[in-house]
Length: 196
Image 1 (cartoon, one colour):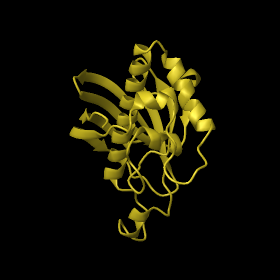
Image 2: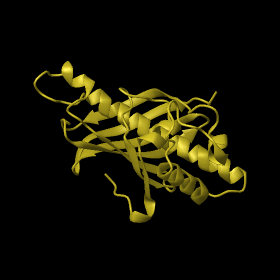
Image 3: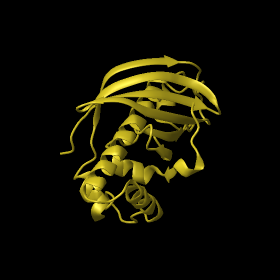
Image 4: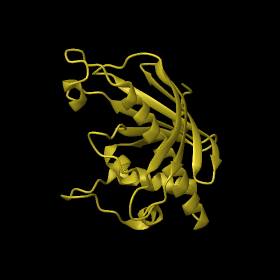
């Protein structure tokens, strides 16, 4: 997996991730974002695999083996996060702001969580750009090889690189690894739906 440089660092936790995409537990497969690079558009994210995951009650009882389809879903969610981030940057630039303004606003969201019951409050220019609800993505084609098993207690690291776009369609080169060992690699093509 290509490594990110320190200047690419964009450390965002699960609260910010849930503001950007519509997925929720138990099917939220991204715990956080580690880095973002604008050219080529690439996002690095992660998911810690806990022994307490609901799926382990039925998927290989007695052996905490993470389902490969969950790794693929995590790569898809990482691809969606990258698309959302690129759209936020594009919308901000159309209003005279910069990519750095968007990244700084996301970092501020990470530093100032909303400590209120109920859904996280959405306010400020960044959320106005994002729209009333996070956009969803629909997979069109997946070409993936699962290379090694993933077990409870491991951290799954994702990388998604946007390689092609055509209207609302996007193609990504994706890879997942655990402790530097690739566990999945391939390409995903999908449709990004407009926010409602």
